[in-house]
Length: 77
Image (cartoon, helix red, strand yellow):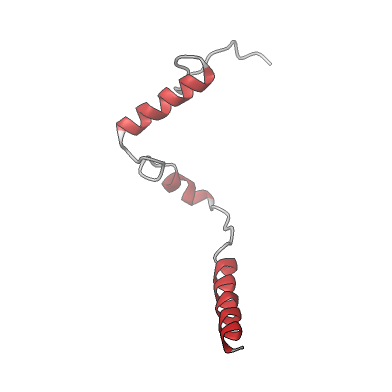
């Protein structure tokens, strides 16, 4: 009996901690510059991970290039 009470209490505490840590906080406009830095992205400033991600992208898309700022197309709507 005591084992079930302890187990239920522990599960309630764990569940309350898990649910309280799942909050969504909107990003403020002045925080976006910090979050856009390379150090925050996956792999950070490591050039090998960026090269690997580009390889995976081109393998999935079946195209080469187009990952830069200036894209293709005529620009007409």
